[in-house]
Length: 513
Image 1 (tube, rainbow, N blue to C red):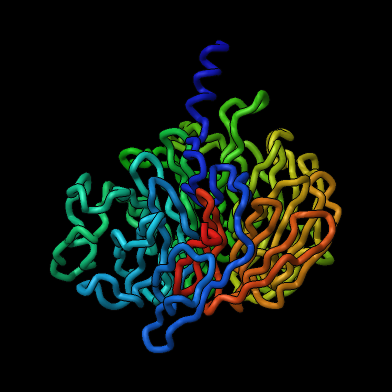
Image 2 (cartoon, one colour; image 1 turned 90 degrees about the vertical axis):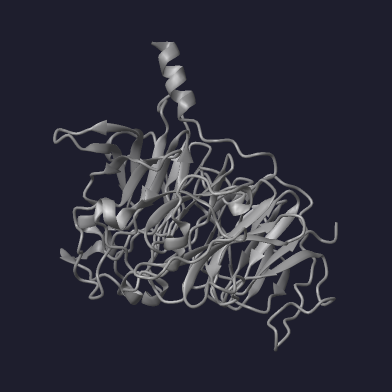
């Protein structure tokens, strides 16, 4: 029995990244936006853009290894592994001359030189803003593992790509020419700069989901299973849920893309707007040998699921719910016994940022679509092993209501939690007690997440300002650096380099090393 339990636990362990890589959203399955790397520069110049070409002017940068032109809207976060840097964007730069018009892309660059390698070109759905907002690029952070790239597309698919692209031939899926052309169009010739699709899983077709605005989340890899958010949500009216019985979270076979299980907790029925949060993971422990899949629902609850598929009484393969935690304060949902309307300042919110696990504690915040503006928020710390069922009370370690709505993921380390709200304020709290240490206003909206590395906190904002603060219990701004375009994504580090994606360019920064 002990041997069997040990084997089960080992099979559910997350894949370990190679030293120094940042292969998936959050750097690893626990999703903590923190890195142990040292000697990361905080003194550099990103340079200026040529007003005619849109390129970075040669010689205008300092401490920058390379820059790469992206599209005109970049919300995806870079990932780095296998000597490659991948990022989602749109097609405004037009790197492949025969891929024209509105496409969402994943682009691959050489880690050392920034040379463009290949591009995954995804046609738009055609339904417009309700399902696939015009000119939005791929918002998912690619997850890189064993030569494969896993990403959620704007077409609400989970796709596996060959990390080498078409350079080593066409493997797996063989109909890239028709896929890239789009439905109803003649096939488009595929070249060595195109992506090589290994498999694809269409969540709209198989699960009947209705993605709201755009399919936006990053996959979680645990063993040979892949967990993905469906982005199921409301229609254009924001009142009706076209697919209330479709799942918000699914498990797929990592190697072949087949459906293994789906959540059956009724999240879609209670969804306020959409399901955009990426799943996270609590590793195996003495109290939970199989680990826990974390999912922030569109109903404002954080869920803990058993990672192993099971069969319910109807014969459906499901992810068993272990517990749920209401991330909203009671006064956000109702007042004087009456529900408070969603998308109003004092009303309830869903979870958009990713839940983070660090040293036995899970941290999660609430927020809404930035189009809804600001409003009340909450950051919670909870014990993921508190029990079963509703653990809102018994699982809560502390809550902090001083934060406004947030679509960011927290960074935890040095005994501190660093969180950003949409209003542009960075909050530093004691990780154990939730006591506020300090706040700092960056004076512009924050969409991305803070990065904790080398005793510093890096966070970008909508004005294109990168704020670098000391990771300490007393507030200290080390430096602010202005980029020539807004920063909507999150900084990441890999192998001694800092990566910043603005709306239009990707910067690899190493301080001139």
